[in-house]
Length: 213
Image 1: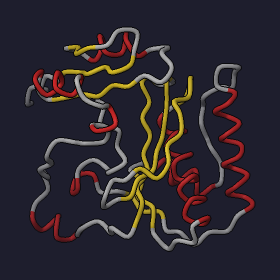
Image 2 (image 1 turned 120 degrees about the vertical axis):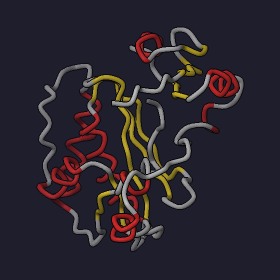
Image 3 (image 1 turned 90 degrees about the vertical axis):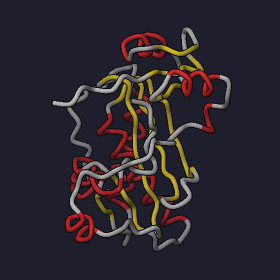
Image 4 (image 1 turned 120 degrees about the horizontal axis):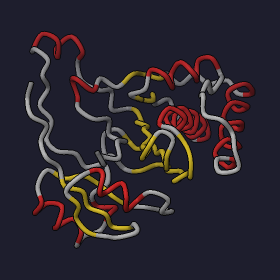
């Protein structure tokens, strides 16, 4: 088994800012901090350089990807359809602070973003991201498809139900109000948008990935 590579974490906004050498130390700075901004890097120098830069210039930018699949497997899967948008969510903890966004698959231009929400899960975020994407494309009368890397969220959207086990409370009231709106939208609207699973093993992280861990 290969040894897990060490990562360095830049925190632009948190209880303390700086470069941290473990996810545990990084998490301590962003927990219960509204609007926390952070991301992981492969080297200390890269993390330090990012700290002196703008968070928005680094979000979603991933290291070069090399697929472990064979040439035949890659050929069978093919290339992504760039006439599309990609959606993803990020959650620091489960439950924990959660946000989601949608981007243009080819350019990675951010089309929408919501959060962070105080207490959510990655699955809820992925579900909301898809529904937001459906509404966004319908509003713009677009025939683009949606990419997601969450089979669970795809299933929830198909069933028009958010089957989360997360219990409602005062802390996540705002999030669940959004969930209820999303479910109602699915029940009240027709759409022709195709939702497709992003092939992470062939293409790397989905373009909407927040690139933090």
